[in-house]
Image (cartoon, rainbow, N blue to C red):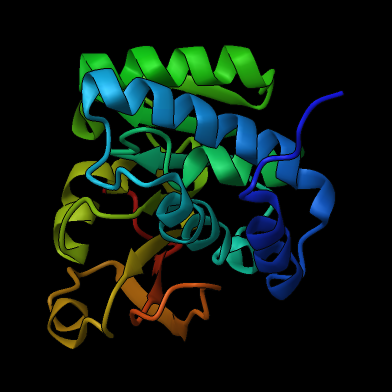
Length: 214
């Protein structure tokens, strides 16, 4: 009989708070165990404590799930798969492209996708600006990649007109919002309550204008 993970109660409590099913917990913990093991050898994330990873990686990524639509999503500079892999686990109907240029991170991503059986996720080893899939996605997301204008500069071409950038930020990024380029409109700034995380978190939603074909 498999011994339950000591992290299970905290994760289940967090899933309850985010209105997500507890049935997601085993695959999320599988991903966390893979990340912890690979992190010891390849330094994929600065967060070393698996318990801290529950709130700072898993629940932080999943807190944006109410704002993720049904169309394909590209996760730019995904690193070890954040927020792309937790979202792909939570949303089996969502097609997720994990875009990352770092070779050791893409090796981990491929192993995670294989081990988790994520048929709805694929790994693209490239810089976002080099991905030749213009207008292929209804949403792009970025967790710690750049300022809003920088994210748009490298990955905006991937969005279909009318598509949305979902950018995870700490404090409300007033200066970044003021820097939005022409053809992009602020659709909303949502304060996120991440279980177990005291830090301030916001999701900034920016829409690519339907007439923008640049």
